Length: 172
Image (tube, rainbow, N blue to C red; front, side, top):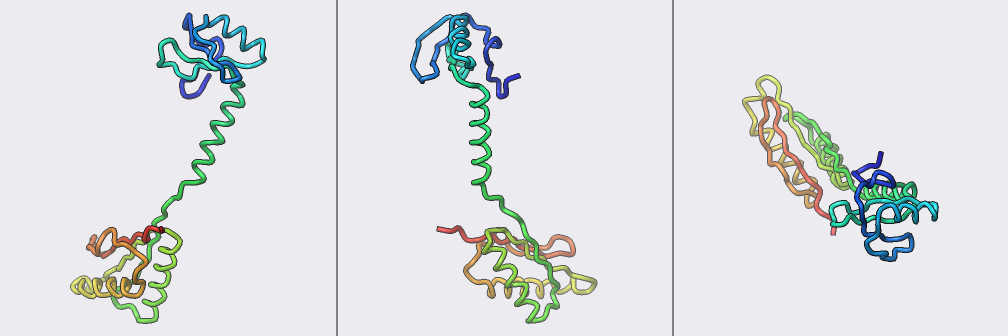
């Protein structure tokens, strides 16, 4: 069965069609059976390319090759798409300066690769009473990676976690 509703050969059930031959020449309005015979004589298929038109537009072409080319275009367009990944860096409010440097460096690397980064601070026990320390740590991370990011979601509490989401700056 034809994909995407394209009907081929005997699946075309209308009396007349507007025909485009294999050399891309307009043949005008032709009876369907005659167009089908023309396609068979050339060893090709009759494919309905614009079923919504009145009368429907059909082309004489090699359907297998047509489908292959369409799938190839689809594959190539998917290759060009850039998938954004969300990377997460976790830390605690009592983080040492050296550890903070390393984590900030990782955040910078992830942003440099074009990924989104979620920076999360986990509060345990009584640390939950001092969420201001978490905000300080997140601001310190932002200072250390200066200029490489856009803050998508500012620091906010979600249960025992405080997190913010950073996007890489758009490349010119």
